Length: 354
Ligand code: ZN
Ligand code: ZN
Image (cartoon, protein in one colour):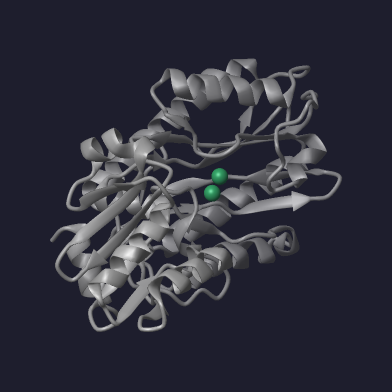
């Protein structure tokens, strides 16, 4: 069944049309990569509205939808078209709409059309990857791991975090990535206690932990990987902390299987770190889905009841951040299978000492 057909089945009974405006969803449903577009999916067909800049591109990229090019805002063009169809109920992607867009849509559609927030959206479909999607994420992780290994010789005292991030992103593109999946994180020493520390002008120093969180966009799919390395001979505390985080990741991975509530995977990592006396330093969720976006469904966090399903691609990334001391995070990507997790990140989890 095509993606559009599955979406229609999801929508059945909810509305006569769905207005899709979130760009990654346009890419997923009809292949459009432009930065301006609105897609209307009805029971019988689909129409993509875009502006003149994307006339040629849309003709080449779009599959499964009629393309309509207008001079103005695609959302307005889509709304006008919808009004002419006289459909009673239109669902829209409430999570992605600004209030301004909502007001505009309300006005263009007129009082005769009921606007409904879509209950189950395209994101639900996207959470389950097919084999082609899994292999793209895997290829992106292979590229990311290769870049990480290439850059290791530059990781030494005196080099700036920013220079390492630049080297990483340059090499990603050299190996065929379209762009980094997000701003590359290089956080060393006390800065490693910032879970999302941007690379700074700080220079690496001896006896520091350095967190690298990096990923690339390859074939439209995002990769995401974290490794923490140590400069010099690690202290007992560094070794102990690192081992606790690695074991938290292993426990999370062991908890993964189709049908398991995502919150149980989080609890496996969090419970372990808690027993090591490190629970209060683990300040974020255990993982997230990734694919056409770097953060997508499903979420793997405390008390999440949604169950994992075969084909989910998720990160597992426990971390410990100790103010003034530093931090450790290890992040791998796995695909959920019926019986368990299959790891996609091709890199050792042992502590690297440089
Ligand atoms: Zn990451
Ligand atoms: Zn992540």
